[in-house]
Length: 261
Image (cartoon, rainbow, N blue to C red; front, side):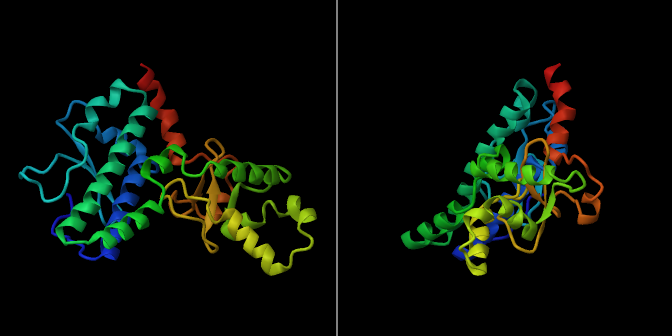
């Protein structure tokens, strides 16, 4: 059920609440998309997609009390499920989810008397993260695909190598091609340049940034990078995967025939 009775009171607490709900929504629309799709049965009553502060999600009926304790998400998302292309339907749910996240955050801000400076700081903190729509549709960083392509070029040189990478390895993928241009750089400058190049790479599941100590894997179809933990792939499993398909690409392939029919 929707988590109630949880009232963050500071800017940092509201932002933490925002991030938790946002992560839950992104999971519903990426790694858990097949389950989410099935739960949005058009034969059921008006349903809403909720993101929870605990980074979980649920599809449920709206609150019965008026006015509700929190702003409500878009009502009846399930009715349009079979009347639109799946990609367009998911994109529409993303847009409404982003609007709901902002509504909840500023509801807390208004309820607990945030002044102009606090509201601005809260918005800037939220605006530093890509939207749910940007993460799910792949529009978060246009240069991300280019980075993945460079990584693919390097990995293709050795058929035995998987497209999985630790973040440290990701930083080294394109170095052989750039070495001639950067022979004058010392080690510190090279490391800083690598961090700049890959620091904006975002996980296609949770939307969080690249980190130097995490294992990543790239989807061979959509070419998005994912934290191994977000898609339940370990380095050991990755060694046996020749062509990795992320949960979203896998579920889209399964669902497409039913949509076309």
